[in-house]
Amino acid sequence: MSLPKQVRLVEVGPRDGLQNEQQPISVADKVRLVDDLSAAGLSYIEVGSFVSPKWVPQMAGSAEVFAQIQRKAGVTYAALTPNMKGLEAAIEAGVKEVAVFGAASEAFSQKNINCSIAESLARFAPLMEAAREHDIRVRGYVSCVLGCPYEGEVAPAKVAEVARELYAMGCYEVSLGDTIGTGTPGKTRTLFDTVAREVPRERLAGHFHDTYGQALANIYASLLEGIAVFDSSVAGLGGCPYAKGASGNVASEDVLYMFNGLDIATGIDLDALIAAGDRISRVLGRVNGSRVARARHAG
Image (spheres, rainbow, N blue to C red):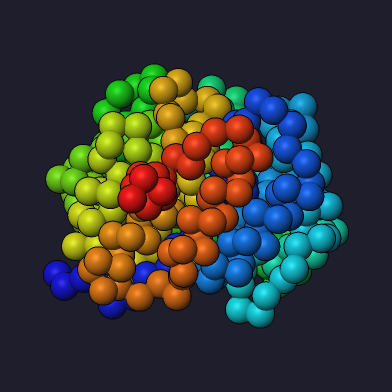
């Protein structure tokens, strides 16, 4: 299969990237990050999450962030809403697109949200109905698609089953997440080939963590399977609080550099994206986690 001519990057840094930070991050710094990403040309930014601050303290203030960002025409500003209470808060904040998440591993589902996969999906039914009533689009995530910290290998057929349920209940797109970053290109191709029998390829996305250094190779393998939407995090921020050793999302700068080298259009300015990653990294007191950014600075 030939490579797609254009892809969409879903920037998850402001939500998935910042949610695990230990130090407080001000609303102003979160707003600046989102505005920097908008200015760099990202067309989809996951701004925050409407969850209990008790469980995810860094997502407190998401409503204030949504109220203060400079919204650009043509850019989607989304939020994670794991339950009805979260959706109601998102609606109040004027959010027009939300995301929900399930898992392909029973053990991970129990550890993460204290219920089975079937129970987690059932909980989404009223949320999906309310989202339709408010003309809010819903994107779905599936965690642990290429391995689980508790179960080990995860069968592609199980991933396909969960993805099919999310798509059937109304998620317009389903992102398959290699939560612990153990996936390899061959297994990635098998995964998408299997899931695509249940959900159209054009409705699938890839979300790869770089724990084992395989994220870019897995994204390339996904391109060969006709996948044209990928989640990434500026400066390589983030991981998963419920998956030990999941050290981080693949850096948006590194993914963009690869796409540029493949002549795949994204509409994103690499220099501006690096600058956005540098700024938030300084706020966090660390160097930019992107290899491309570090190489640029060294050169």
